[in-house]
Length: 118
Image 1 (cartoon, one colour):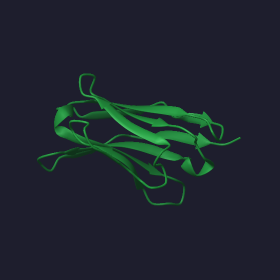
Image 2 (spheres, helix red, strand yellow; image 1 turned 45 degrees about the vertical axis):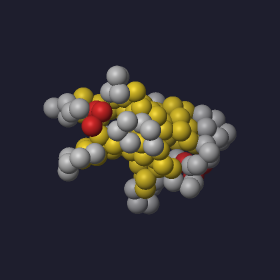
Image 3 (tube, helix red, strand yellow; image 1 turned 90 degrees about the vertical axis):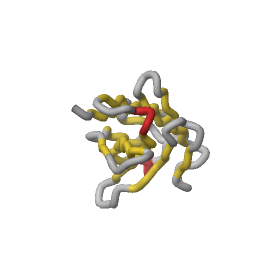
Image 4 (cartoon, one colour; image 1 turned 180 degrees about the horizontal axis):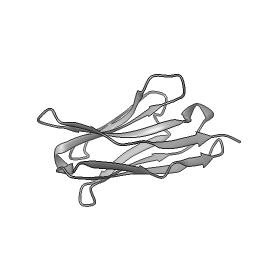
């Protein structure tokens, strides 16, 4: 059974930090590129950051460059998103996404809410 479980969301003040985690099971984590997406109320889901299966390459949306860091620990089947200098516009539900590096399998997590507000 495939599972992607996000955690670490919550309410934080502007300028604050959070670290999201995504723990996966049911598939070979090291064979999948991983990404964080987010969806704010009334907006489309957007890509935040991506990391390759080995963790050697990362990419970020322009809106989060320099503030967010994506990482992964293949031994723990876990991906992370460190979010610093949070802004109100970062408020969204954050989703974990797995895409098979060679293949067509894709999986989504259930999401975790991040709210940036004073």
